[in-house]
Image: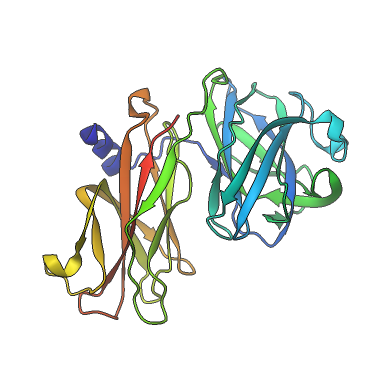
Length: 319
């Protein structure tokens, strides 16, 4: 199975369309967002889950839908029209303008050329970050399978109507009607520790910015990159017991190798101290339950090896 995964890593296929990312460049926020999507793939799509843009902290979230074919706008403040899809309590944010996976199984099929409305909201605060739009109901972004439209911001539960607003997040979906298949969420688990470039630089940190699932991109974000480093390189392989880098001839005190096997690597450009890379996971059910780990390195001037290393993240692949 590692051989199969190595093909995915080295190939870094861009064929997968899911997820559709709206934006993570927030400049506003409230409790939640309402928005419409339209399926453009002839087979329709099934929305499986969302990744959201949350304030730092621990939050409770809810997802609602309207009946198929009904745009959100007439029912912005009409709670009775909306159906609760699911709730998730105690979601720890990955940070402002960084995707936080939302483990609510949406599993909503959207037929071709059909509008589907969603309401994604925080129930215990105003932690949902979004972006001011240009025109309510205007097409904001799209791919070969669906279109995403500008919507509204709301105060929980169904109060106010701040518009136009652009929901920030990833729409994780599958082509066709797979709503009868349970979501089987993947998971990200951090292990080991990173090391810092200097006394004023935080330890290099790797986080799973989306849950790994077949047919979708697994997004990994490296944070706290030293300003001297234009990139971060994320290595992929199998997790292992921490080995100090000084033990393998690299004079980087306090830094560890947290992988036992290397299958490949992906380079990400550093922007404001963070870099996100994406690995396209094949739509192969044989991968469900398999694990893949990552660890990042970046440049520094604080040691003679000129590198710092991150903690490791192990992803368990879901569907």
